[in-house]
Length: 111
Image (cartoon, rainbow, N blue to C red; front, side, top):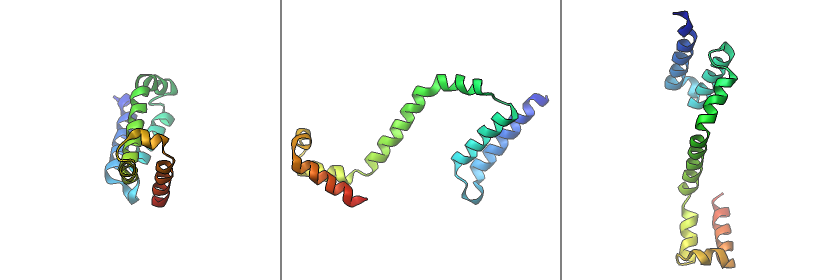
């Protein structure tokens, strides 16, 4: 009965912090705190972390790649501007110095 006490308390605390977000605490910090607490209390050990990482590393890497692609595509206006300059030809973007300079100018102006 007491074997499930720590995991349950850690789960409830982490869930509470993730939902309530006291003082604007980001959800990621709540999750990291719950993970650290689980490691410190011995609910999980480093071998468990390694086993899970071995199973899900490729899905995690794909998820991170999707997030990065989404961030790049969210700033699509420079890409649309460059495509308009080269009239939609991908080879013109690669081989045209003016298109390269235009793309650099548009991207630099946005930052």
